[in-house]
Length: 142
Image (cartoon, rainbow, N blue to C red; front, side):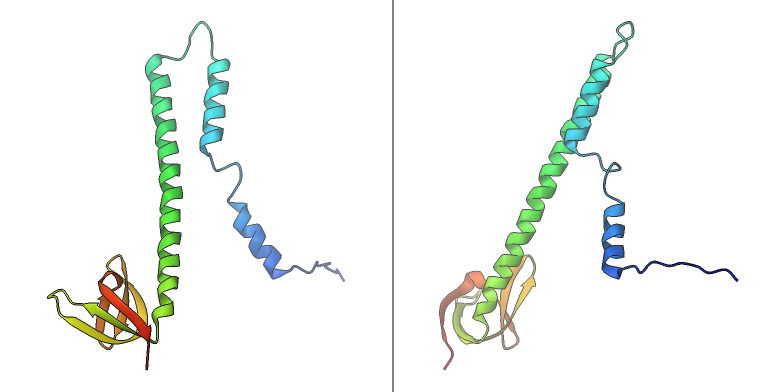
């Protein structure tokens, strides 16, 4: 009879190992790209050097990579600020607000929820969504 020895595996350790599995050498960031380009320039054949257009094309790729990386970082910061803005408006739930409608009329009511709609944070009063930019007064509900 054959026996099989098994090791206990912690599920959370397995999940972490799977998350990190795709990371590492398969990802080429801007620093690795620049190092690779420098090594290529240092080790090129002196009798057959890299042509100018090849070098310019690689520099354009590097520039694009850097711009995409910066855009990704900025987009992440923007999303975080939107979520913080959304969370900070949750303090309005249960408060009495006064706002100006698009026709210039003043209305008031108690905030029941906060929603993110059409790129803006809006509070819900009854069946009306109110853009927070239109709020003119906030008080404790009576």
